[in-house]
Structure formats: structure tokens, C-alpha cells
Length: 492
Image 1 (spheres, rainbow, N blue to C red):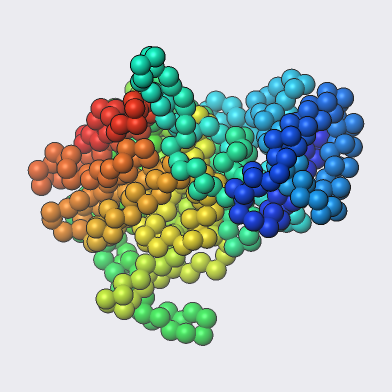
Image 2 (spheres, rainbow, N blue to C red; image 1 turned 90 degrees about the vertical axis):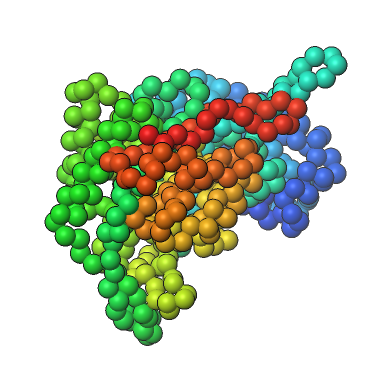
């Protein structure tokens, strides 16, 4: 049995154990109150270490026999044993390319190499359909460094930015993998990229460009048949050549402003992409690749991750997510139509296939996802559970093209309990003055920031402007007081 086959068996065993844990008949946190928990956990850990040292075949024989027993017994101890084994399995997983005997490497599934993004389109375990659980990669994200001052001096510890019991199952106790129940209605595309080029272990910089203050997007009304019913819908009118040229120019200006500002992630509003920005060749976005080459020739750092303005075509609306050199990493579709209840009309989006979530991992910093406009405002319980409780998304980007703004502001801090920072950006041309433009809520900061409070355009729209949001890679808080880490938002 080679290392790859061994690792496949290893991950599949974890899925079987997760299924056993999920059958626990009480709320998951009550598992830790089972009689004999500490004793059973300790003996299971010692047994795991003993068999691990014996080599691949003896270990797999032991673990399969153990799983067969746990699946067949009604003894309550099985839940503690299954949990303890999962934590042991998780603790020795690495994504490094290594042959260290004490670790199990998943590098062949997630080969993290500088300047080479990794696209993982299937769960790590191959038995996810049969077992009903899918396992995904997990990497460290930002934490709070809590400093306590007392008469004896100071003491400190690292703690999560999230609440204690918000993650599903035992996800909060796993460091290298996360898991979710398999649901054919939702599909996760994991993308792993390397750290930004000039990263100094201090912060991640995210820039949003509103692009324009012009009201460019116009709509047509129509009747759309769907599932034996008729709906009043609206769709974008085609853009003129001049408007397409104008939007492309504004995109380019924002891109180079972001380069000059050493931005790590750049995103734009909804609906403002044009055909030329969407052209691809051999899995590369042609225009972004050209911009990358130009910036590289001028010795500028380009954003490591770029989310283009969303592109609206026949019955779909999606954001192209690209790497710094233009490599297309995925497309995040808008999953549900925006419905204007007052005007009794809906956005013309048809999405009968599995709902796709693109999650971009930057190991050591963030797990990043995107929800377009109304998908954020109407985020269902199932979507919320998948993205935050299961996958642990720590940074959510929300592009919009909306005349309404207060609903977004009200929603920004809702996911802070998961340790999730949310950044929302709107097109200035979509709303009426005075505009909020966008805003953010940084997990751990306990407040909402509005872009208009930092805007220095004074009503004059400047080409290529960006709102630059600084997210610390680690937070420091003394005696549980409010975190203060300098300027969070700058308008450039």
C-alpha cells in the first residue's frame, strides 16, 4: 500500500468516525459530560499512539476493527472513543510535502506551493456519498491574544475570535480539517493560495472599488415562465460601447491604485463587468493577465486575489475569482434572485443546479467566501450553517449594486459570532446621495464601520478610488477592553 492509498484510507476512516459521533442522541456539547470522559479519552489516545508506531498495516487493521466495534455497540462510551480518535487523527495531519513518520501528509490532495493556487473540487474523503459526511481542508486563521494584568504581573493566551459553541458537531475541536453533512444541493469548491508577496505577518489588506458614481445599469421588464408559473422579472439592458470602455478604464485605474497601495485582495461591485473583462484563454483571464504583466514589468506587487465585478448574462449573475496572474480560480454565482416586494418584480436568475460556494483559503490568515447582494441579506439557515458553522469562513466579501443600504449595515455584524469579518461594497451609482457606499464589521472589534465616514471624494468621483480595509492577522486585547489597532479604513 503506497502513501496515497494509505492517506485515502486514513481520511475515509475519519468520515466513519464522524458518522458515529453524529449519532449522539443529545446536543453535542453534552458528550463532554458523559461519565468517564477523561479516562476514556486518555486511554484512547494512548492506544492510538501505540498502534500508530507499529506502521501502516497494523494501524489500519486496528482502526478498522475499532470502527467496526463502535458501529455495532450500544455502549455510550463509543461516542467518547470516536471523538478522541477523530482528534488524534486530526492532530497529525499536515499539508506539507513530508515523509515524517509521525505525520500523515495530504500534500498529494492539497499541494501547497508558492505561486501555484490549488483547486480542490471534491471533498478530501472519497466515501462522502456513502457515509454522508464530506471532509475539507482547514488552516489556521486569526486569533485574539488576550493579555491579563494582575498584581503578580501579566499573563496571556491565544483564543478564537468566535463564540464557543457556534460550530457544528466537533468542528471547533479540529485544527486541520473541517466537515459537513453531505448535501447534493450544495457544493464546496476549496481553493488554496499562498500568502501575499509582501506579507509581514501583520495584517491582510482588502480593497474595494465602487468604480463609478454614474447610474449605468438599466433594466427591462418581462414575464418569465418557471415551474408552471409566470413571474414578473427584470434583466439588464445591454451596455453601450462607450459605457463598456468607461467601466474597463475605471477597473484598470482601480487595479493599479491597488497595486500602488500593496493591496492583498481586491473586489468590485455587482453587475459592472463587461465582456472584455471576462475573456479567458487556457484557464487565464486575459485582461487581468495583461495587467499583471504590465504591473510586474514596473516592479509592482499585484493583489494576490481579485474578485471581478459580477457579470450578468442570460439568467445568471456571477463573480469571477482570479489569482494575481489571472489564473481563474472559480466563479461564485448569485444563488437566489433579488425580489423587489414593493414593485412586485424579481431578478431573472434561474439556478436549478447545486448551489456552489467558492472558499479561498490563505493558510494562517483567512477562509474567504463571497455572497452577492441579496444572497447576503437573505442568507438561509442552510447556507449559514454550511459556510460558517461547518466550513468556518472567517472573511465574507459582499459585492452589491443596490439602491438600499441600511439593510446591509444592519446585517454586517450578524456573523461576528462565528469569528467572521464581513466587508460590503456598493456602487456609488446605484444609490442616491448621501451615500453610505459600503461598510465592514471586523470580528472582535465590536462595531460597524461605514465607508462614507472615511470618503475624501467630497462628491467628486475620482478615477480608480479604493476603500482600503486593514484586517490584523492577530488581535491584542488587554483586560478584555476594546481592541484598538490603528486605522481600519482608508480611502485612496
